Length: 240
Image (cartoon, rainbow, N blue to C red; front, side, top):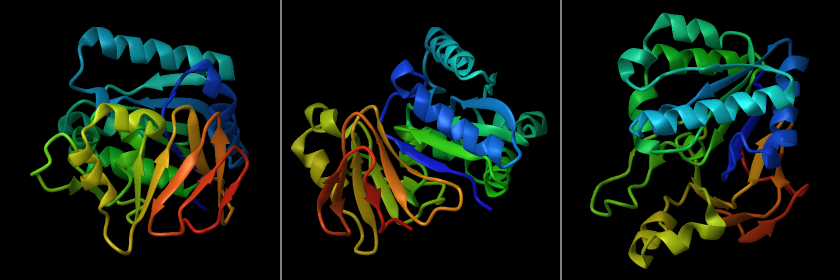
């Protein structure tokens, strides 16, 4: 029984997303997991110590709002990701949250490690798993290099191999050149490309067949299925 799975455009740990994160935590608890909120900051591993401390405190404040215990896992290298002590802390936690940063670094650090195995095992037995921004992008089979356009996509974690996510979608194309946008919009014929706006997510609850939009803005289906824009509460029936 897989737990709930969420792809978030932005807003991890912010008060505006507290009720949504609480619902993910509750989903895991209903499936017999402990009320523990796991922060996985790996995507930000190249940022400064001050920034990492900022993310740690932000997540801890959110966990307090939700009435949960928080664990910040300092997974910044593959050596960290293969540390069995960190993998043990994942076990039976209700919510595991991969936050934003560099999706390529996140995938390179976690792929094929003890920690990633522990995450999949916990999710597979009912825990909720959320990925925000880089954490959402990395769940595909491939991650585009929109900053290095001549470089091939890097391998993702392949939990959702056919789904590619553009986070921060309502602001994304203000930040990157048109040439990079064309790279992002080119996906294999058997893939689905979605844009998820800031403070917005799609979630597939444990046991459900469909995905639901949650948040302030929209989710945009861009390629692989009929183009559409969906708002809070609307169902996406075609994501597998």
